[in-house]
Length: 205
Length: 314
Image (tube, rainbow over all chains, first blue to last red; front, side, top):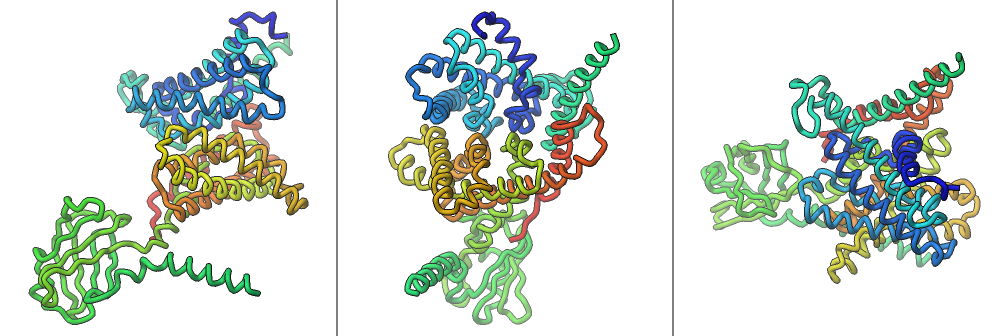
């Protein structure tokens, strides 16, 4: 079924119709926890993209050697290995950003989205498709994180990527930790509203 | 009967071990020393002391045990009217979580008297528990375990079951990870394997609890068993060993942190499920139905939990 799908379709599916944060509502912890700036979102997005792509490819290569009964532990160990890699790389080359993200880099290991993609896609499909699916999901997560980070940074400190844009701070509340819940909740409601709006329009026509 | 007696003596030994730091310092000339607020140390003596010596602030040297080079500056030392206790006032706020060492020159004819001032160890352990439970609640202030949090907080009974299973698994896996970390990873310099080892141990614990519960208590297993699968895919459970490894906690501290984290998760689930049950009856706009309203409610809880920050009991 997915074989006739082009790689572009696989990528866009991850970003739009099956966006991990807004559509599948998985991996919410970092989306709420450290999405205070666009930069944080981008960096964690890159880390997740890396882990997702490499784990998908690894599992896809070895899918015929993995006994079905031990598949979940295998996935977990594969993910843990790649998380260790990105954790050490970030700690070595980007110590400041790593300190900001804190424990969340290590916690990528418990992200439901990665295990889910391995279980639902990578263990059945060929390597090439798994690669693009991983890219799509990783990018989808990154985009989601960056959108939330954009809203919070713009409204909270009037800046984007640390550059002052508005020149004033509209609502300081948005960079406070608990605002993460509100921003994610309101954005989900906004997407729901668009969906309902379009459905009604179609129904009327 | 014998085993019960044995159990009791073991309990007593543990209690004595825990309480030992409380009595350890209280000997000799100095009979009692406590923090009095966050800028004062109160010291009481067994006998009356010389007013001239006790009130001269240059006779005192005070520093935190971990930084002996940084001497803290006293602003005054006042002797009580019975000449048996002195209050040391400091210019800056003291970090009362640290052990402070006080050295006094020429007190009671002795050239130098040294004693330590610290909060009781039991109090410190308790503060770790309270901190993980309320101040740094894993769901509302650290934002961990949200997938499971939103997934299982629809009904009160589910929430309770989930919370209890979580606490059990968390304590068991945290203690196991602590042993692994202290006795295998550190001695053999395998620190980089942290993530792989901890996630393996957590999965192992979950599997073990599953098997044991199935044999030992099938009734309990029937009501709680379904939640066990969910436990693995949760970041709270892996976060505890990682925090323990980061802060280099000892055994009791690890136990308290795991207990607090589990209890905090139980509390969060219970609070959320109570609201969810009410939300079912409420008239919510269609755009907010489901997850959005749950997020808004969680945000309000998070704001309420901000009120716990700065809470200090001991």
